[in-house]
Amino acid sequence: MNALIELTWIVTKIVALVIPLFIAVAYMTYAERKVISAMQMRRGPNRVGWHGLLQPIADALKLLMKEVILPQNANRFLFVLAPMLSIMPALAAWAVLPLSDGLVIADINAGLLYVLAMTSMGVYGIILAGWASNSKYALLGALRAGAQVVSYEIAMGFALVGVLMAAGSLNMGEIVRAQEGPIWNWFWLPLLPLFVVYWISGVAETNRLPFDVAEGESEIVAGFHVEYSGMAFAIFFLAEYANMILISGLAAIMFLGGWYSPFTGIPLLGPLFAWVPGIVWFSIKVAFFLFLYIWFRGTFPRYRYDQIMRLGWKVLIPVTVVWLFVVALMILTGFGPWF
Amino acid sequence: MIEKVIFYVFAAILLGAAILVITARNPVHSALSLVLVFFTSAALWLLAEAEFLGIALVLVYVGAVMVLFLFVVMMLDINTAVLREGFARYLPLGALVGVVMVLQMLLVLGSGEVDLAGLGSEAAAGTTGNNVRLIGSVLYTVYVYPFELAAMVLLLAIIAAIMLTHRRRGGTKHQNINSQVRTRKEDRLRMVNMPSERRNDS
Image (cartoon, rainbow over all chains, first blue to last red; front, side):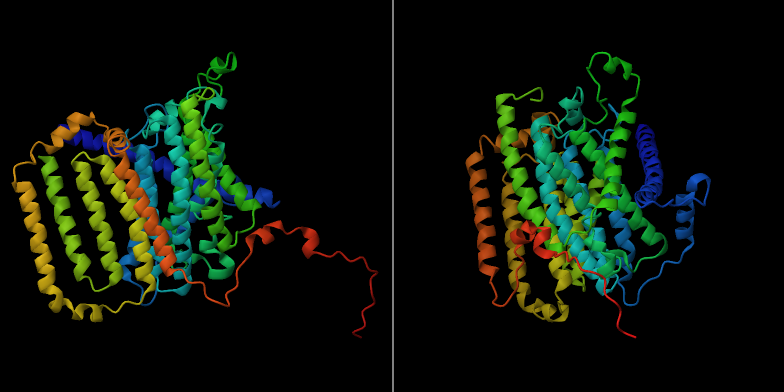
């Protein structure tokens, strides 16, 4: 009986996290279209609902109605499995992200490792989608995406090693608590190069512009999901945006002090904002990173493929390795207010 | 009770997937079954409260090694019929290796030196629920030289593998990234100031 209650409680927590997440994904697409159109001096979606606010719901309904087409000679089983494999890790990683102090589904000690393990699973969905569709464009897109994700995972992992050295823990809650204090106490300052590397790798991991050769429209139509339609396509879309929100959430936790207010501990300003709940600060930080994603998309031209690989292997990884030594030195000397 | 149920369910999945690895007709299916094997054994390790090992298994084998495997298998056009021909011929050898492995395991586990029943509880008691910290402190103090040695061997293996397989073919074109990055507008673009000309296609 007790086990049953516990199980219901866990499922309730998961549902309470996943439903807002899906709504956030839906309105992320709306925000993206609005921001991009503002950058391009257009109006963007403005027909469905007030200022187009119902547009994401209309899109979702349209995708639900559409037929899912199976390409000829496609591998049926893997073709259907691939979208599921791409959405599951994107959602599973959220289990250890603390949205506020103590507001987390699973407060496990190896939280950071768990996140890395889960995000590294996401590449299977992409590769299998490309292979199972029996299409040359899809296969090329999958190979590009796979190689890119595997390479940038290394730089990303190294950047996070710096964070866990500085925090002295793998537990996400502990990492945030190690950054307690005003904005200059957060890890983005002592770990600035790692922060930049993490963010660039995060953009590359999610296959977003300017690193979106995996779906380079002008060369390989839409990459690995070119043969998908209807809800199967929508799930890939959902996974991509859920991953973007995940990477932004991780960046907020690792480098921008998670749920802490930027004014913590400052006289006058600190008490003035003390009533704001931690989850609001966390959401503001995540929204900032999501805006960066859209801003990049509106601003940068697409990288050439060999340049992406060069950036990952020859620039970002050496930078992280050097900065890991610097972080170790800073910890040994008890540098600044951080260590 | 519930742990036992979970263990047997996962063990059954593990064995089923392991059998699929060698019986699947499609090499991609084989590779994916192997992924399932790794994932399920990681879950079993989690059940034994070895969370670091379990997650590391997913991170290294599922997240990196098997992705590369899948890459190679996807790009090669493997004819499984040819591979299957040697099955009967190699069966005695394979059976011998299997028997030796089972014997070794029986010798170790049956010797009475390993306390199987107390294994999980002892680990839990010694680590106070954080075996990441424990593994780290043991690995970098007591076993630091074997650890460094293993790292060196791996590094050497990487360099050796690259040296053995990397052959520079003649006649290939290479991008000189440095010169590309150093390029300025003046190198590529010439602005010409000229008066407009009359069309003469009439």
